[in-house]
Image 1 (tube, rainbow, N blue to C red):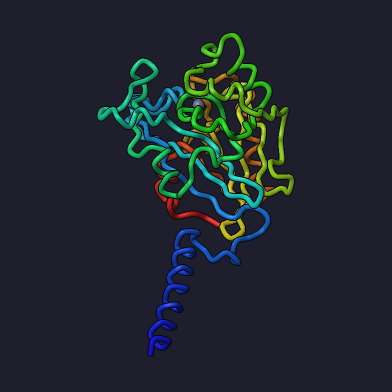
Image 2 (spheres, protein in one colour):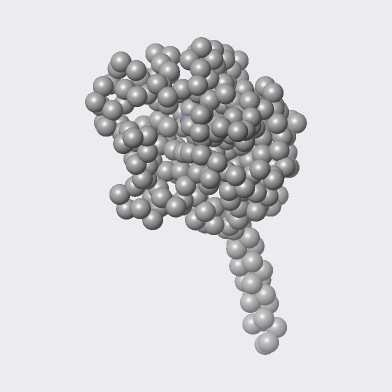
Length: 291
Ligand SMILES: [Zn+2]
């Protein structure tokens, strides 16, 4: 009698445990790939708006209101957890009217903090093992100081500008990232294969800043995705090869856009433009993920 009752309970408990582990991991353990990129999350790392888009497209779009997205990407690879970009500072979430920068040119908003989005995924900042930014402007390194446990991947030229004697000359604010000064740093001089298997490639794309870089992520089902950083800000600028006014070196920027275009063709990759809200709105965001 007792046995008849207990057996189903035990089975039920085992099933519940299995179900719980499935729900927590998002997939049964045996389905996790043991190599390459397992999944990528797109995180909403802020939004911004301007009343004059022409600052990003000199001579065009004068007085045009525009909204930009600001994305971060969390990439789970068999060998580590890479955060690419850290968005606008979480501190701005407490400001209901947002935060105005660039002499009123741009208003930044944070609807949901990066920390809370990671928390929802069961990830603490200390779990991030690899860290990279397309560049060191404040809307990309806003939460950089959270990730001191990670190895930082940065171009030597960007490092010299950001951690050198005059970061403000490049539009950088060390308050956002000065805790990374003591991090393990991989200083790069060109393209770099992050995990050594070709699945995540950093491409040097200078111009917007001295050591700007873009990221190619090979997703098993989605295919290769090329993350632009600020090599371009929105589709119309990409199609017309326009360089924004606030930019380090125009010639380098144009050459970097040509380099990205060649990578797209060679790798049959899709370009994801970080600040292109129209495109970003079509992407599945965390807790959903891409494989
Ligand atoms: Zn920028």
